[in-house]
Image (cartoon, rainbow, N blue to C red; front, side, top):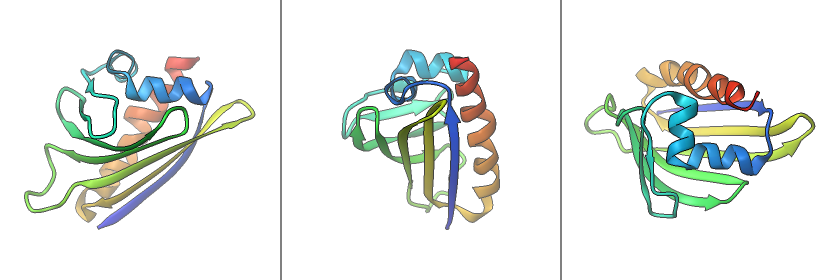
Length: 128
């Protein structure tokens, strides 16, 4: 299993970045694909028209999101991965740190690139 670690600065306040990620309408708007998010601990979510799914394990508004995460392409016997996003106020906005563990090795490079292309770049544009 692989781990993906990324850091990016988003030009917005931590609470705004948190809300964009955890609010169904905002998530749908910045990604351009349907998201349904039950934004409470234990709540389930889907994103990218049902391609991504999981549930919220830990939520700290404006600071931290921890989720159990998988996609429709996940190998059948693989457990869900663990996604942790930490938000910190910095000059120029919010430093977002992603730590995505237990990703199937054969899919890690696609998801590494996917986070940048389908999340961080659109999120920056959303706030510009």
